[in-house]
Image (cartoon, rainbow, N blue to C red; front, top):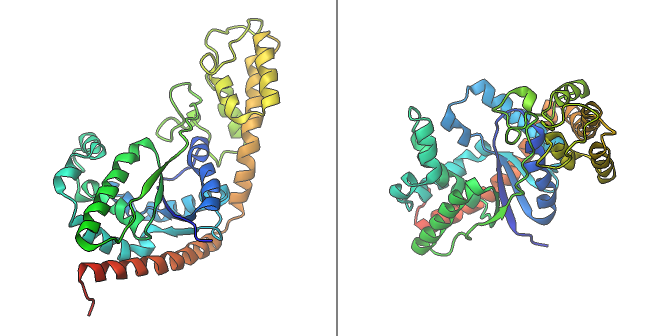
Length: 331
């Protein structure tokens, strides 16, 4: 059965936390069953921020382990590193850039935001990011792309590029369509916003944290600010208590209902409530951590090498078709 092609990029940005896991990785399990999926680690994209070479190499390996431990199955999808097919991607990026007006890229909201935030690092790679993203998608003739709201504008640029390119050279590429990612916003332990690696390490749960670390972090988590003493009734709701809000993501329904009742009746205190939350979170993190620890570097390299072969075969077919359509002949 021929399934539609889906493309999804993975940023090699180091440590994975519980919010990432619920926001993006769990979605992969469904996508790889439904689509002919290509998942790649976007190491070329990361060069806009000039990471140290050793850090980039290590981050690629670490994020590959994270995704494999989370359930990405290299037998059901193609899993590779972006730079392993750099010849085809960068060549296609060049061709696509010829049909993309510079003014449109300079008006891109995400570019203007990043240029304002980092005025000393406004490079072409930053301006041309949406064109390279389009090349990532089109190098396999991707039809579907999982995106968050912040990436929709980039996908629309890719669709514009496809229309312009096809108008000049024939019906080569499909217009990629978005699959909106589940906007799961796991609350920060601090009670301020969502879990984020940019915040203090005690405000989020790393998927590498052991049980003792999880207990320590959750013990300090921000809870119901109006409940000072145990004999006072609590406010077990998403709005009233940050700890209860976290329970709604990680604690089984039956236990959640029990906590809600006991907290409302002041028969359970915050210390015990946090202990239950620690156990709930650890029941998710520990199996992931154990799966990840079993992944050797050599195994991961073999997986990525196999993915490169599959991605290379697909990308070479497409780039050959593109050259022919443009009129280029590689003598």
